[in-house]
Length: 294
Length: 168
Image (tube, chains in turn purple, red):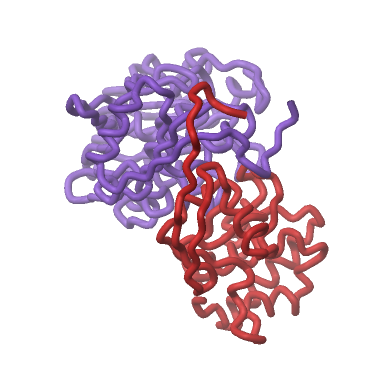
């Protein structure tokens, strides 16, 4: 069948709860009946149009004010439906959470960022998601709620594969918590794509803590190089507790290209991704290192 | 094309404002905003390009922020304000961005123009004096197949410099 993207052909029932309680009730009621949560729609509606993803009940959560917020008092707490464009307008994020700011800025285009949400980016669980490497690098957590209660899991453990997460059918992401970062911490996000509005061929977030010339702690997370964002733990191990110099950075770059597990696909090749990972790691470390100074 | 569950799809009553006018409508859950605008309200300035969020031709303002009407459910605009390209002019007086596009010959076939103009207005609201790089970066989701980008960037620059970027 030819795809017609002018209309949304399939039929479904639509809900637009105004409170979280209403949403949790609906999820509980329809949990076994193919209910999907709609936030920005920039992934879900595209899938419903192009690959005929079937949805019987669609619940739009954009009107739930309780999960539309941005709290910068202690670390960052970001509501599930806070638009991506609102997140990057926050000065604290621009100044302190550079990798997250750069990750969101690299996504698609302004209109998409006005629609899209961070929870949607996580729930969609694309290996090329641009908020995921920064969130993992910061040690961020996702809060999930259902009628049964709530739980908090690391973003790193939340996504399990391509389009796959640990979320249960009666659960909803309500917020994302990013821990406080101290003054000696610097981060950076880098992405390679064909043109700026495209999805990543490969992306990288680095977050490191610096003590003089020593790298006290660091996290290195690549996207688009495995079935989910991948932490380069061996490479992190090479850098942690070490004096940083160009020799060590070169060694880390060699290590990282053997640690990632990219494939050939529509957007790039494994060979390109491995070669780029070296240069991106060097640049990412340098940038995060310089930022950690202030 | 139906999902596995067979149910009677209820129509949804919505109320919204379109270019400053209050409207009521009865929409199906799978109606898209773009089709309500073009086919029911006959506001055909908003264009259908790709339907999957790549081209920006269907850009409209939803509560004063650009969004893509091809990926917005009509039901989801209940209680919201929509502005389309038709809502920019005040009577016979065009919006300064429209004037700038005309003066700078930033229109060839015109298909991308409504989306370009709305996005450009949003840019100047956020950043009243953008550099050329900032303009290109912000406009990256609006694609012109005539490749008139040079004039489009020029028009946006001229509008910013003219100080005519008052909010709509």
